[in-house]
Image (cartoon, rainbow, N blue to C red; front, side):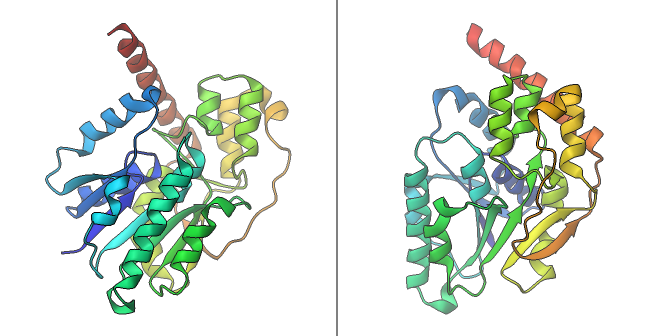
Length: 277
């Protein structure tokens, strides 16, 4: 039976990908790493949602090389989460991922599992160059370039979550400057299209886009309102990184942002309760 290995299982994109395969009845090995104490409760909340599933096993990142990964398995690597999150040990995490890829390559071309990278569309992905170099020559490897992904559990370092949390304008501007503002996708629209994305094209590089025009700006206007002009760029240059795959957006921006706001309120209440303990 095929197993899905998800690196970044308690982050944002990785968590939803893990949920998606578990809901389909497939086996998932989740890989993650220790985070700062401020975010520990978030990992615990996510573990409560997926940890009881009999098809789920968790491995810490430092045990990654001990996994016996078969040719029919698929390894999902969420570089998107590594870049958008607040991490203290990026080099260590990337190094462990590269070591796993190199170990799998030693088993021979016919025994190498499938590798799928979730990569941000941003121009500068130099921090992932060692991972990109390692997957060169693996015919089954795919790189899926993602625009801004939003929804419940979005990283606190991303602009929509920063806006919902009403952070200072300097923090919001910094978050916007660090992400792709040319397009956006609601998280469940992305994961539900994942199987189709992986089978639709034989090309290695695939860039996802929304079926909703100007998706990022429509979301941003809902969050920033009248202050939109002072925090967001007036225009955005589209970036093309591969074969374009249009994801049908089932949720309108109004619905997606409303769900993210509702979840944010719940999480902030949880923070308050934790501080009282």
